[in-house]
Length: 72
Image 1 (cartoon, rainbow, N blue to C red):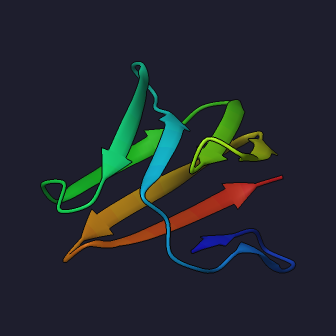
Image 2 (cartoon, one colour):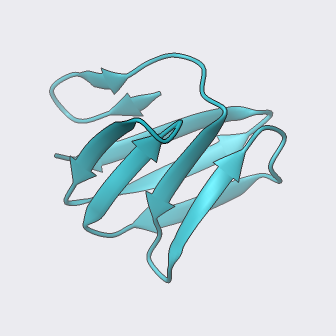
């Protein structure tokens, strides 16, 4: 799920999510180890086809669920 303060930007299943992490870009796949990271300005890419530009935010991935909170 990808949320900003006003609405839900994406809610559904995904095989991969590319994120602009605070140190470098990274990808989350099914069954990735738990992670919490800050996000920089960039683009979140879901399944190589949905692109969501962001200003900054954070991501939490745990128990195969991804929660991304962003400023759009």
